Length: 194
Ligand code: SF4
Image (cartoon, rainbow, N blue to C red):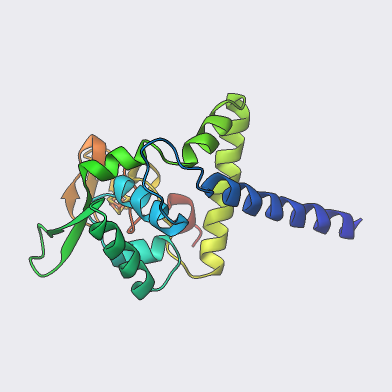
């Protein structure tokens, strides 16, 4: 019986990996530059990350890769005109990465769009259950690997919900920033585990 359960769990892990591979495979849409999976991941990341997280080092944490590799990926996207570096508003010595207009155009041909559509056509209850189960699995894996978890303000322990104030970054957050992913995210559930 135990063997049966273990084999089902392994199959589920394989299915998730296979789905991720297929979803990211680059069937290029009209007008899209041919990008590698890492380049697509970086472009998506910088389009979704908040101002505290749009750095090559935060991207290296997100992508679970080395700082050098993340930096090379960013450099290649800057060279293609899809990303640009700007001086950080709080620290003049560091830079923050922004997606250019060409980058946003490229994202309209994101190969992950097919996977989003397929998942979006599942019944709503299935989508909710999948979101809860996968979010928990990601949190548990991140804890096992001592890796940071990325998330948004609504589920973060650093947020003062009454004032939209972030105690970690000591900033008032706009509604748009509340929807962006963040390297300083601290999930409410994990932080309450003791
Ligand atoms: S509340 Fe949490 S997720 Fe939001 S900006 Fe602050 S640290 Fe990041």
